[in-house]
Length: 294
Image (cartoon, rainbow, N blue to C red; front, side, top):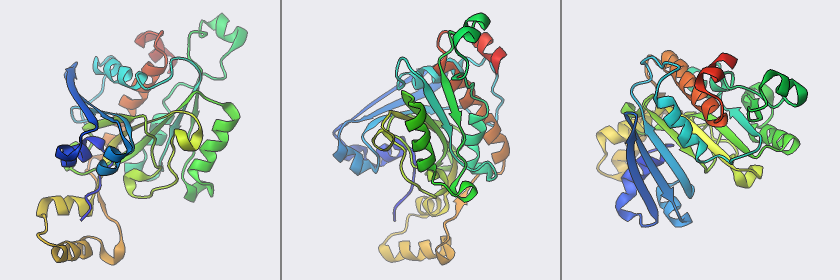
């Protein structure tokens, strides 16, 4: 039985004894546990079921707790995002997901709170003192069921037109364990498949498909029901696994589990991520000045 997870750290935990081409480092900053994985070869990535590249996992207190705008953890998360971004140039932030489905609404809610600055330039920027802001564009592409356009097609069209130096995509993720929901943040430079968190995979967004670096940021909001039950029950043989799968996925329907306080979790997660992304993009602006612009 394949146990599904979008978190590289969970995949690493399962296969760590077999992996030789993966560097793992952990440290604590401002009360946060930060775990960094560097998957150095394609073979190691295949064993983990992930792409080769860098993955940063930040373990957080429960996001149902309030996030203050002056929280000392925000600059720490912002620095982890900034490590993977180009030093200069315009960045496009994309909020993936469906705002009408709460566990999948993280991306759109984050994009609404990211400061768009690409249109502020020239004399207007100099006169208002905003010329120190990095040019940023924001896109909320919706989902194919709403627009009739593949998310990847829409993003690629915009990238070709405005030519950002990097794309930051934000999406909901799926974890293997309930205790990681709303308590884990993953940042990677390997791209992402839109809809991955709710099992609706689309064309992958990556440097290979878009032509520019793609930084993926996500927080797990769901656990695949079959993965959860399989992890708890651990069927002894293939027959038992098949019977379990038939019970948990009636008529082939994919089921997911999400916390009952998911509305609050999404709001707090969107607040945390949007502030962290804004701080990472505008390094030369103080937190107080940045908050005054939002």
